[in-house]
Image (cartoon, rainbow, N blue to C red):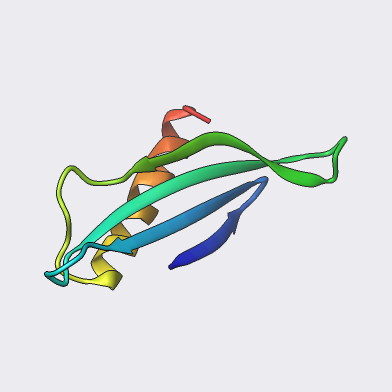
Length: 78
């Protein structure tokens, strides 16, 4: 499942994939930036794992993806 959040000119895609057979969730994040010329968001950070280990539920995975996305924006990585 995916959640999209807009932060200024950026859009975070927060993704949680349930792993087979165990109820663990892998969090992922992708970052998009609004392009004035195109009048649309373009990917500036491809989907990457947001945690080094699976998490116990969906909400924890989404929150880990949110933290990772915000950290990327703060660091100026995107």
